[in-house]
Amino acid sequence: MTTVKQTGCILIFFVLMGCQVQQAGNLSFLDETNARRPVPSFLVENAKEQLIAKYENQTPTEFGENVAGVYTHFRSSKKEIALTFDACGGSHGNGVDEELIAFLKENKLPSTLFINSRWIDQNTALFQELARDPLFQIENHGTHHKPLSVNGESAWGISGTASVKEVIEEMKENQKKIEKLTGETPTLFRSGTAYYDDVAVQIAQDLGVQIVNYTILGDAGATYTAQQVNAALLQAQPGDIALLHMNQPTSGTAEGVKRAIPDLQKKGYTFVQLHSQHLQ
Image 1: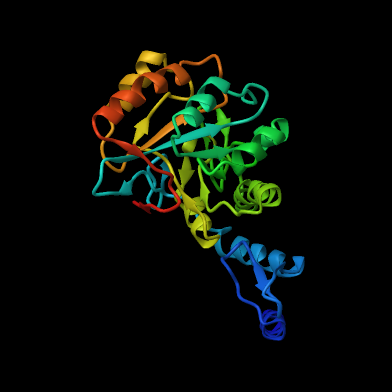
Image 2: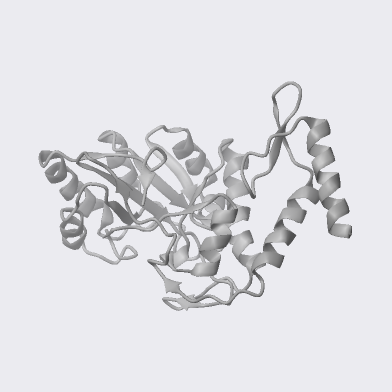
């Protein structure tokens, strides 16, 4: 009975306010002036509690980079690829590859940047500068840079989120931070390590979030040499998504990208952001 009453109150509130829910997990309404207003916190918490209740007793059956529901490429009839760059944050991940960023800007190369909350905190002014540049699409690389799991599954020595609540917070807290700083809400997500379990992927879908991985391992966590980065990128096929890093200035990433791009362009390739692509 309590649930029915709560649901009824929510429906009445929406009717009275003339609301329109934009997407699950990012609730907002439009008032009579058509201005976006945040939904009261009790409604957001109610949605969160419903997700916890829905998934807390579900046991994952898959864990990895290519779990069902994770997007790895996009459909294209043209010679197009997507360059994506992670900024991971943390004690060893708050750096800035200025050479790489300068190259992307100078050559007008559209890119999608997956940014972690900790990196934003340490590089806030640069983050806002990048977000204002139309060359760069800003997306979500998580709050604590953890694998996305409901039971703490680890990858590459990093423990994952350990509950439905932590899965939601890993995505939503950084999403809110990016929205506050840029005015735009990211809808794409890549976890720390790019590992997920299938329950976490379903939770993301309920939140209106698309999880994006890759088809080209561009720099293997910024451990590749410039030659390895170059060789990886030159294997590109139409619709590929390349995973690289923009937070390790001493890595071979910048030099490898600088070598590969002219050769890819000679082959007829162009570079696109992910926001307008049909992800698969």
